[in-house]
Amino acid sequence: MQHLDELYHSIIREHNKNPLNYFKNEDVTHKIEAYNPLCGDHFHLYFDMHDNRITNLSFHGYGCAVSKASASIFTEKMNGLTLDEALSLYERFYACAVEGKETGIKDFLPFQVASKFPGREKCASLTWESFKEYVDRLK
Image (cartoon, rainbow, N blue to C red):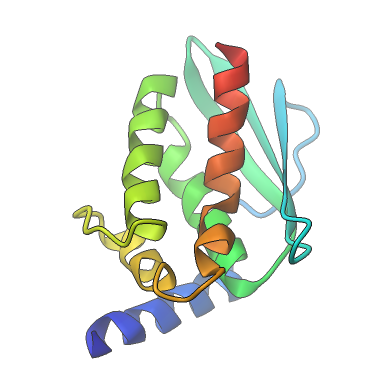
């Protein structure tokens, strides 16, 4: 558990300090709002969809270190995937961050630890769940 705690802190800090794909991209085909009114985390996801594939994925907004790091990893992992691949990856992330299960994806490990802290699983899963809800509405 000590190793996971250290990994949690280092990866969360790094993605919070230097998030990947952190910019507004208004010139895209899809925009999603991810908002948690209980804590105030608020992000927007921007992406294009061509031939059922996610491209040009970015995010912008504000939130705690856990939600910002998770959004950063979300954009890194989802960019270039088909919708089916993205939904499969969502299921693996959810199992890790909310249910605390091992998924075999190293970048998800910090969020497995987050599942052990009450309320943090919502921070970790905010952008992921907002994406899933959006895709479900598209179908």
